[in-house]
Length: 143
Image (cartoon, rainbow, N blue to C red):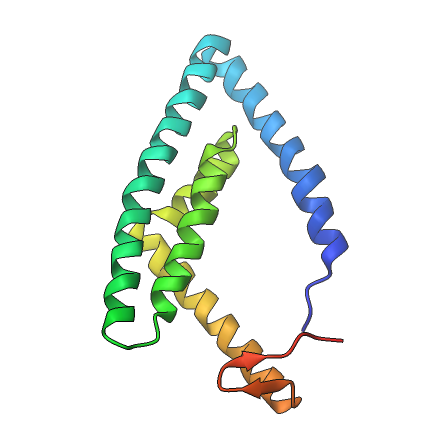
């Protein structure tokens, strides 16, 4: 099943910023503009810290798995989730920060990683059934 790109882009570029704006206005009404801005800055600093910390851990795990000669699928998935989570946390807004935290923090990342790897495995298996695999683990681009 292919995910339609246009609705995904509309969601990412229109709906998400509107939701963020609404939440920011609500938080600003509740605690005041200066505290809201301070909270956003603190969120970004926390995001930067977590991105560095978890990025280092993930990179070390990737290097260790690669040096053992194994396939670092788990480590690659972790790396992708840490980068996505870090980008979301560095983006101003509280909603994206929550999703960013879920991607960066190890317990929730473990759950997301399992889903990501399962989806990737299904996609590769589907490509293999359709004859679009040209070599071990290499999927040809779709026409």
